[in-house]
Structure formats: C-alpha cells, structure tokens
Length: 198
Image (cartoon, rainbow, N blue to C red):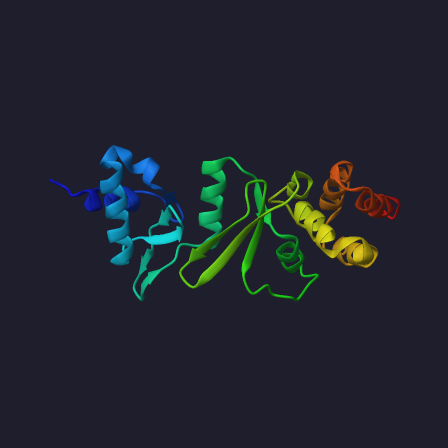
C-alpha cells in the first residue's frame, strides 16, 4: 500500500510544470496531519519545493539535476487557481518592449490579488497588488506599453510615450488607445496626444 508521501509525490508528478499544491487539495490522500507531515518530509528530501508557506511545487528533473519550475508557469498556475489577474510589472513591461535597459534583480508581477513573496529555488518572486486598471490587456504588447507608461509616471510620460510608440505597430497603437478610458487623467491625456499624432 502507498504511503501518504508516495501518493502525494505521484499526484504532483502527474501535474504540469509550475502547478502548485497545498495541503487542502491533498486531503483525498490522507488526514490533514498526515498530509502536512508528508509534505514536510518531501521538502526535506528535496522531492518538493516550498514556494511559500503552505504552497508547494514539484522540482523539474533535468540531466544536470533538479531545478525550480519556471517562474512564469508557477505564476500562471497561481492566477488560474485563485482567479486573480496577473501581468508583468511596469518595469518588466518596459524591459520587454526594449525601452528600458534596467534589469530588475528580482521578478515582480502585478496582481489583483494580495501582495506576497514566492521563493523558487534561488529566485525571489514578488506578486504586488495594484489597482485593476493597471492589469488591462495582461498578455498583449499594447497592455505592456500601458503598464510601462504607468511605471514611468507623469513626469516622464511624454518622453516614454515617444519611445513606446516606436515599438508598436498600428494595430497595437489602436489597442493602446482603447485602454485610455480606464487610465488616470494624466495618462489618458498623454494617450490622447498619441491619437492626434496618428
């Protein structure tokens, strides 16, 4: 007969990379105390990683040894399981668009959920709560441009928008303009100026 640890490990191995586990979703495999003990045992043996208190992920086996699952996969799974909206932070968005060369020392994602820190091996990841308007179009280049503009702020907006405009095609510019209704006044004003330059 399988032990609780073996059952949890088999369950985790059937999940896609980046999927997270918590004791609550493993109660079909044993009593809460047994599940908690098994999770601790698996972490001590390196067969599971503690992402944050109460949340675990399976390391990815490679020919060079185990590595942490990809940050993006873990964050995407958390967003799906909690129902929150998550996107790249404004600094990361600016970097993705090539309008900033600053490389953040840790990965930051903006979320509609609570702020929290995750640990994936040596990587520190921050999920930072932001107002919902900053999470519009989370996976498009226009959405990244929108967040980058918010990141640069009112004082650098005009200059940042000139650099952003050069990175977008016509369709992406139209999508960016469509986001201005949810933006704060200063940002909507800058985006309206972009419309007049079309």
